[in-house]
Length: 231
Image 1 (cartoon, helix red, strand yellow):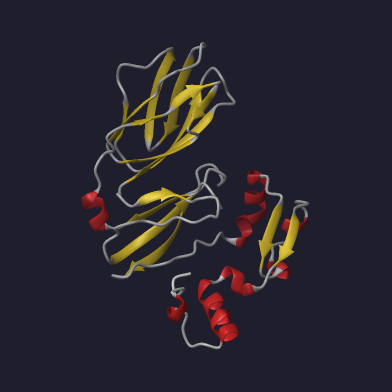
Image 2: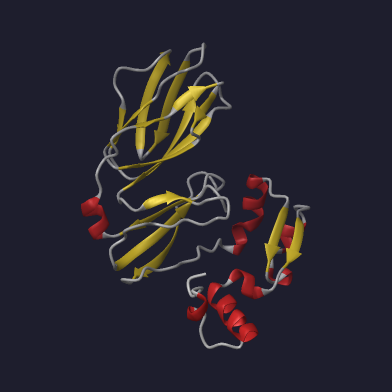
């Protein structure tokens, strides 16, 4: 899934985290820009109004409760997000406006790209909790998490969405097609969504299985000779 927020958490990571130098969530054309932001604990966020109408920005989320009443321009005081969590933003004047600020207590965070991937650079070896969150998840849902051990050479992980949540995710994302390894294993409710379901070989969803498949086809013991061991 593209646009997911991913971050690596550990006691050591929490010791290394520092506030970002600057962050803003603007209002333009009666929407928040960006719709999803990721900031570290202690970051001060400004909320410039670039519309010609006034906005009333607020959040009632436990991670940060605040309110900037009717205003134009840029408020003099930014809002400091001082504890980890997910703050849902709204406008008291324009109900259709919504945004999310994910506050993390780690310097190792990012967003998945169009292919659903994220690569974190310069992560020290150690044990972490990999957490993933997406705006399409149910309101109030905690990030999906899994243990991850990072070796000196790095590590790879696949975040798997619980099958029971799949129909709701597809509805929120307005997906046109679902690729899967076994359509018979999908929850029955998926068929009711009307989405196109395409079955692909299992190795296309499993890096280790895909590597073995390539080795079999090339009749080699390893892909190292092709400089493709990390593909």
